[in-house]
Image 1 (cartoon, rainbow, N blue to C red):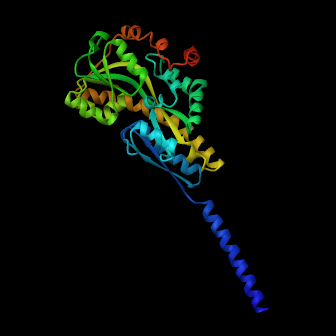
Image 2: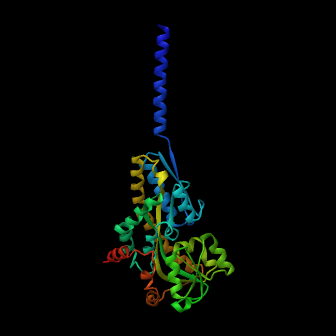
Image 3: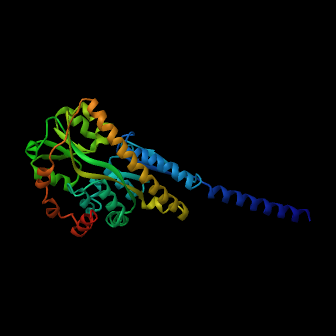
Amino acid sequence: MKRLVTKRLAIALSAVAALALSASLSHAQTVIKAGHGAQAGHPTQFGLVKFAELVAAKTGGTVKVEVYADRQLGEEREMVEGLQLGTVDMAAVSTGPLNAFVPQIGVLDLPFVFKNSAHAYKVLDGEVGQDLLKRMDAKGIVGLAWWENGWRHLTSKKSIKEPGDLKGVKLRTMQNPVHIAAFKQIGAAPIPMAWGEVFTSLGQGVIDAQENPVTIIYTNSLWEVQKYLTLTGHVYGPHAVMFSKAVWAKLTPDQQKAVREAVTEATIFQRQTSQKLETEQLEELKKKGMIVETIDLAPFQAATAEIATTQKNVDQDLLKKLRDAAN
């Protein structure tokens, strides 16, 4: 009898232990490391911090997002490759390196293709943008959203007021075939270069100029090595927010749903933050001594008008939908 009671007690204790272990596992925390290439003062940093807060709240703390700025998880192309391999959990990167993985993204990089921010948002949140995100799936990546890097402008050591002023200028571009072709068309000498090398290269005279949004120019202190900022707004630059497909598969359906909801809310916040910071930082750049010039864009638009038809990576059907969205 005593042996029977002992056996039943052992079984009961084992059941309790199993339930405790099950409860513990169900509340185990999943840590997601999210990287981006910009400085900690960039809108994407603030967007990811907001995203992390939303994910924690929506998952009851079972998913924790850690944010790593300034290429801590690698240069942008390295982060994209890491997503494919499952060594990087999440990343927000510019379109430059993505063309090598999803060539159709090149349609977003065409000069002067977007009329304004409202047009860009309509395209990115609509059929064209969502189609491009879905194409990432075949590359082992879950595309979640398009955030804002901003309108790209020129900075240089000399004044740039017309296309002729760029003739022979050594201008850093992203490793982006559409950008490179556009600046060659104008007459510049584009030099594709990883972002980590740009500041030093400008200071040493390896390159004369570069192009980026105001928030990148400001957070990287480019006023120290560039005198002029020309407001060309030649390209609208988005950041693609992506997950490793291998890591995504490890989340429960409820967690995946929470992440998608969080990224949608964070997108609105990130874009609003971007617009606010761009306005503030443009004034700060003037105070830092940069000469900010507003020019006639028509000659630049005319000089790059044929790029849309000469680039093999530009999907003409997607381009038509993009342009139609402006109406």
